[in-house]
Length: 95
Length: 492
Image 1 (cartoon, one colour):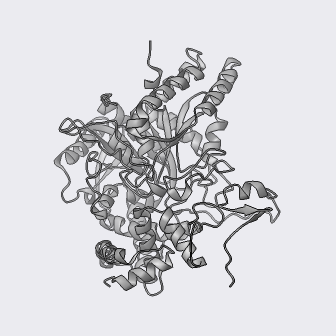
Image 2: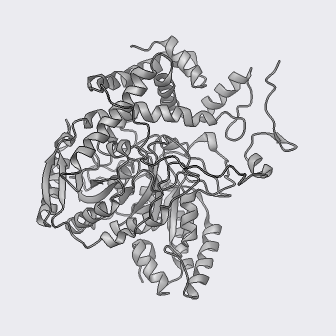
């Protein structure tokens, strides 16, 4: 499953990382190197093995459905690149 | 007069309690060391001297009244991965340059509640992605150790390179760190310090900048096994704010020390003998086996057949989780936002291209690829199944052994710049440590010897889930047997 420049362009877009055209080929080469090494996982017999998503052997906890925090607008906005009147300010997204 | 900055955490706590010296005195001594060393070692990215002195004076007031917590007055360094209220937290990334959290991580809250003093924030690989500290947006940390063979600056390892360098260079009594694939244990091995990754779920991840959430775990880097046991206890707690936090008691692990290993069964996994492993690593491992045998342990050869697949599985799972976790950096609510962009998509893409460094971009791209339609089952789900195979390997040996002994790393510290060309060469650093992350098991690295260039080498002990007690018990015997007293010569 060799990765070419077009695949890198598509995946970089999925990752939302702007990648200049002249970086696509070198990145494809790097990713192919890494993925070729990863291919060895195909040697492992995983028939009937459940995917392991967590190390934690306890049921997920439930808590009461009540408000425990909030009303901290200033703290929430304190690291915003731009804010005004208690809101995040973002570029116009609807043309 | 005693150099206060060379004390162990235990000796410093005893001295503070006995009022032999004040927290303000020892804090000032560390600040002086940091001021002198940091231009060369680059271990701290933020110094919080005023805050440290305030905290120290408050500790002195409590100590004067005979009060105080388990870490009262002890100056510590904090990896820049832990959010600290009102103090810049960047995770080594330009994406978070200038980010000042309005809240405190649970781990650091626990430390302050126990009376610890914060000297500052410690440098690290960007978002903990790296094994040499060279991916940090603040430049690499330099290892206080030098090889007798060359004057080159060496890596302290990564991603907790600032923590390891600061502990080895007398820039704090001990430090917090975090470990996703080996990021506590590898830097500890490279700097002659002790590093512990506890069982997954022991330490809360709340307020710890996320890399790969099913693998990330906080732990200490310290000068001795006892120091590590003391600091780890304060770091750990059950935390309702972390859904994977384990609702278990945090024991006093110093109770494990001095117990010896008589009658314990120690596993030596044959699959950890890897191609191209230097003879001195094998010799160190053999030596460790001899020490434990001499102390009365029974050595059992074991097989963990899927070991070789741990790193490739990790390099699917960790980037996949990272690509999901780091999606939050969109330049909208916090973090870097690009100045100019043609559209919303362009703004996201440009902000992230400007904010993330090369290695982070590489891993996010891999993560997006292995999670993308058509490849999800072939890569991601397969890696999760291999992960279970690796965990099952460990499950299968726990009725035969009480703990496992391996080398911590396949080499001693290497020169900065040495492994930057090939990412795969860098990834191989974690070959002995990554299995414990995948299986969620506790692991410790203990300094056990020197290589031919006089650089420290570490041995790793891996234990059963929640059985840090046995891990500390074995590590204590290794520490006593090794009698490791070497220190880096002060060249900075």
